[in-house]
Amino acid sequence: NDWVRCSKVVILSDGAAWIKTAKQTVFNRKNVIQILDLFHAKENAGKFANEVRYTAKQRKQYADHLCDLIEQGKVDDLLKELETYKDRKMNPGVPNLYTYVVNNKDNMDYPKYKKEGLFVGSGAMESANIYMMQNRMKLQGMRWNVETGRYMLCMKSYHESHTWDCVEDTLRCTTLT
Image 1 (cartoon, rainbow, N blue to C red):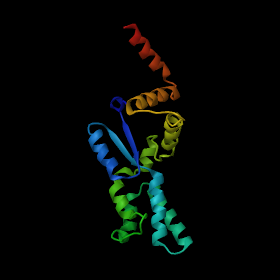
Image 2: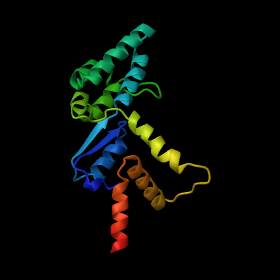
Image 3: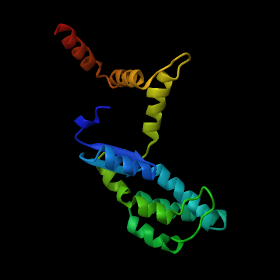
Image 4: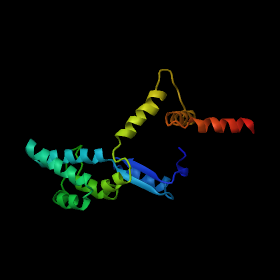
């Protein structure tokens, strides 16, 4: 809401192609940083390691190794490591990690993002979604349409971010004119 006033927009995504498309169409004129959610990247590395290694010890060691490369932002090293698997067909629910990384490599510079103070994991946002939206909007007997729901979430956001004074100032100015 009101993103056009932002000097920087950050999209934290799971790597879905539609999010990249939305970034290009919705935010085409803005300085937008897209970050592949670190949790999703590591989760996919774990699934991949479970698919390509045979023993539990091998799977854990390989998953840890892949996760270290991911977290350190060593995408080129990761791709070299995964190149032998690039054409391998995976079981349902298991991503081909090579393809996943190729498709998201521009969004995996975690050391840089952390240095800039940006979130690299979606946990805080998912918790905020539960706190901000679900706990307010899904109460018993609540019914919202898009417009009134958007207003309610905006007001809750102002209240929870301790900027309710802005709302009161706006209302005061509106009623005075």
